[in-house]
Image 1 (cartoon, rainbow, N blue to C red):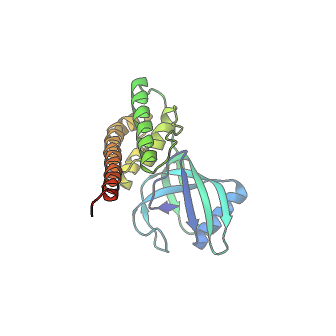
Image 2: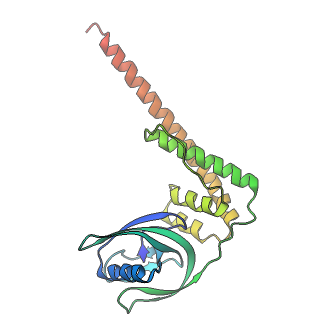
Image 3: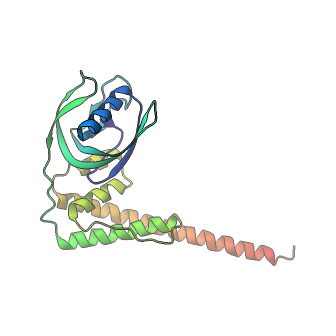
Length: 216
């Protein structure tokens, strides 16, 4: 399924489907307990009859939840395995493709790199939750290198092309190394945002206090 989104293994993706071909595809997947594939569009529309050009690496998706809404369907898909796109067939009731599943290489990651980026990402998540006003600022961060690399890639505020590049990286250690500076940069940005938010709140409290005791 060509989309304007990148799906990573282990990550959720909510979808609303109304095109008949994709409704038929999901019905087939549910009936036969089969996954479907998600690939990022390189050029062309996400909907309609025109065939979009896609990137060559995508992720298989398992349908975790399905809700029939009559003229459309709501699904929650979970990314499973990366694949290489070999060929696409558009002549049937829904698009089909020949793929090659790619091996996951989560070994050989430096413990120092894993500890560093896991700590940075945990801090970034905590900052985001504080900015959103949540009192509980802890989130379960995977300790397994490949799962961590995909979670970070999914949450990074980078372009779709950059996310696709991270998906295509073969070795987990290389993916984590590429993500390290990006996570560090985002963490600093969230730190500044939180500091600005706290300053604005303090200024507002001070201004209200001054108004109460004003002679005017």
